[in-house]
Length: 238
Image (cartoon, rainbow, N blue to C red; front, side):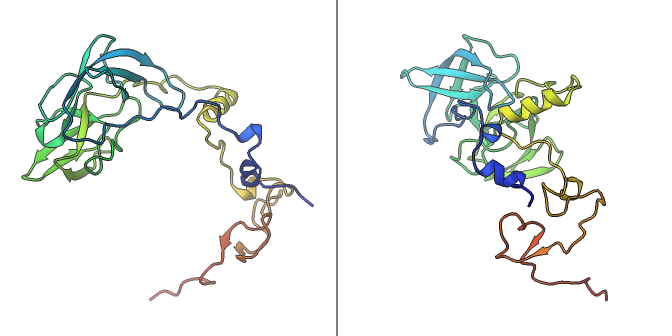
């Protein structure tokens, strides 16, 4: 009869596939008020499970607090500025249009006010390449160029935590606990590599053994492969 597929077992919310408590309880984003002009002090540095990079907790002059991604070289007691006025301290938040060319930046907004979407992993950084009247060109860590509105904001510096994965993991068990902590399914294996009881394509022959096209109304244990395919057969050339 077989048994439930792995994706089905995950959906049931068993302990083996449930994220650890407090994994994603801290949100890192800028204030939605783009006209805000605040200066704060770093009061703590947090090693948080749900982020590859350390976080800083900033206490502002109006006694509000927020969490930001920590740049390399920052320490408790340093000052961080968020606002329209240029301030080139590491970790400060500025408009892309106010950042000189060649300055390393991270946690970049894709649209003005979205709180930061790009370049957030440990050790990563991007660079300002060029400015126009309303746009700014950014060189991303992948070396691709992205053009964004000059009103988008970013933090100055390089994300802390670089070299986190330079040391070999060595053991599969360590990798398992690393992935479990952030609620990621690991390892991901192909259906043909599974046992027959674990997947419809499983078995020692290491090929599907049946058509990979599946009805949209197939039962959950069989609904794998090309679900409700629009066409069948090979494409004609020419």
